[in-house]
Image (tube, rainbow over all chains, first blue to last red):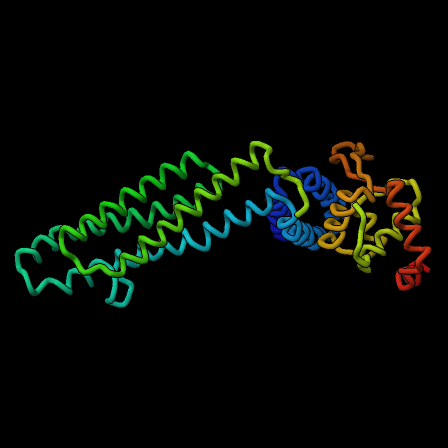
Length: 211
Length: 100
């Protein structure tokens, strides 16, 4: 068990060091065998992970990795859960598809009927938004920019369809305004990261530069 | 790259250990044992000092078959001069005591 945890920590340290510090990751891995021979592999591996984490802000690739993870875990994943919450009505009755329907249902019976008919589509759209956000976070961490563009286009399409449906069905959805704003922030963040990654990949940035 | 900050205690320990070996190469794990530094402290120092040209590193074939190649380290000429300047300034009395 200790050996498995230690190997996992070493793998994580290697990931954190990235290509620009690949030599150092190999050097640590070679010394890991020496530490393992003396039964100190867990201490050694934990130290290597700390070293790799401390090193990340000092090189361009590490800073890019930190930015990727901050956007994915700090914005995309919470946005995904927000979409799921809207879809399944976990927002305490003030937000989400059920709240929107309940607000207008009593005034115009024909409109209410149309709104209830649209309920499955609204649910699917929100669930799709949530799933696409999770997929987008995964693709971003994988630096699969083609996939990121596809997932981003899917999110934009779903969000636009959702907004159009809300407008056409005259649903009360003021809370959608900040969500749309967050989607715009996501788009800008992704664009900036793609530009940054492109510059780093083309060698315009000194990947191993000490910051 | 010229250093304009006071070296840390850990850096002084590492410089002392490398200086004591002169031009002899040594492994990272051996440096850990000699200095008492943990890998989380030693490797950032080695990386930084290598970037600064104070330490040189190269790969060496393993002594035992089946083991991976290992990195070895020693002070460069600039590193030795840096160590000498530390000695001259008597900036590391505590680390000297530790090696006494």
